[in-house]
Image (cartoon, rainbow, N blue to C red):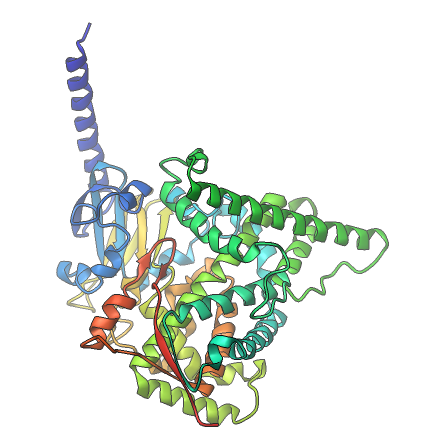
Length: 523
């Protein structure tokens, strides 16, 4: 019989030999790409929780190394090979490879388990693959249409005017707000509540469903916790006897209960109308009603209660936090680049004049949207996308020092592909002067070049929803107010930027509190 020490040595030897073989297989899975050895597989919950550094890149790697990671290796991809645990990761910033990957997304190339963490309220259009994803997409896509976007404009404009009547905005013609993102978060939340769920809430009102606003806020914490702990302890993490976990669990259950009740009520209404021979086509102004109606029209192929709940949560989360973040970043960058801000203001005045802007003006407000695109490029809310090929593929990459030198790279089935959105949006082949805020660059580009909202079959369903909301809010605000930075106590903008614009990398990339000053423009 082996002694405990000998058994331990035998186990260690077997692990080391097994790991050597695994590393060899990982190295063979990608040919001709610079290699960086790390301790464990990047972007797992364990990697996120452990200290970050050279041997554990962490979520901030794509931001902190955005100017050096690929240029130092002279190639648009890096193969991360874990020594102790996990699979290899191929980080890349090639526009050609990105579009090649995303054009096949959903079928031949799919989201791995690591990319399906947002399914804890139910399977949905984001956290699904293959035929299930096609089914979700078919039912969810019609919920976003021109009537939706017109409603988004109307609601955003109403909320903007109500915001100006709140006490905070009556402090004078020059007001400094210590955290302007509180306003962008509030407006984004109320827009998705109204246009997504037909909850028409005033700026200073509380939602009609008790506690829903705080529930939504706490659900953001729930999502972040789920991302961090899902792999380590998916079953029991919410059972930990702590005040934080109890609050998260309560918010999880509250929102689920609310969505279940609303779905059941809508289904009952549709079935009642059908039973008495009434029209069953939707007349709803909101995404929620259109989604449930489209699902019911599919009969047995419709979405079940869990799937409807999962999709509605994704719309709520994605349509709230990401838009709020990008709006405040847009304003901060325009405050730095005052000439760009004044150019946009002149365009608004020439296009709109003294009347209230309407949804019909949307297509004429290119410069406003260009600023929003450029902020999304520099601070993409979705900072990485992970995919897994279902068969061997060949991807196209370029040398960073010789942009004309394209190379075909063999990638084996099962390797994890990490599309580095921060690096993609700063690739100088696509975006000259990549670190600079230049909204005018979008005059000669399509919104399809903005990979912050994904690309191909799985492009974000709420993309135009966000664009319309942003165009409306920014048009109103920039016409009425000049946006400035308060640099008191800071020696330079760079010092201010390091404190307030360094992003937090959780499920999405976002900043912390951003202080801005607004100055009333002459009527």
